Image (cartoon, rainbow, N blue to C red; front, top):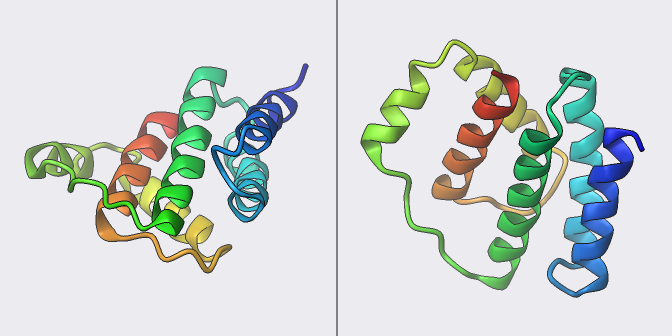
Amino acid sequence: MELKDILNQRLDILEENHVICKKVADYSRKAVERILEEKPDTEEDKAAMFITHLAMAGQRVLDGAVEHPLDNILLDGIKKEPVYQRAAALKEELLKETDIQFPEAERDFLTVHLCNLLS
């Protein structure tokens, strides 16, 4: 099974079990495409972690749940990662694909996961 299929299957399960709504699932599927364009050799566990986080974060935002901000020391460390700029740019690109307004804390967590995925 290809990574794209594995990730989409994961999103299908989350949607079928009403963990995420159709809007979040559809957006997350677009993100799967973009991630695999950016890094076709992405490790399955890193991709699964990112796409699950993205979907859950999108649903949290729609549900009005608030995520605690990322620790500043951790955030400063992430900004020193060699892939940070690429991860931040990719995050912005992905967020342009949806009208879900991710707050700063969620955006920071997405950047962390993207740094992990790209490294």
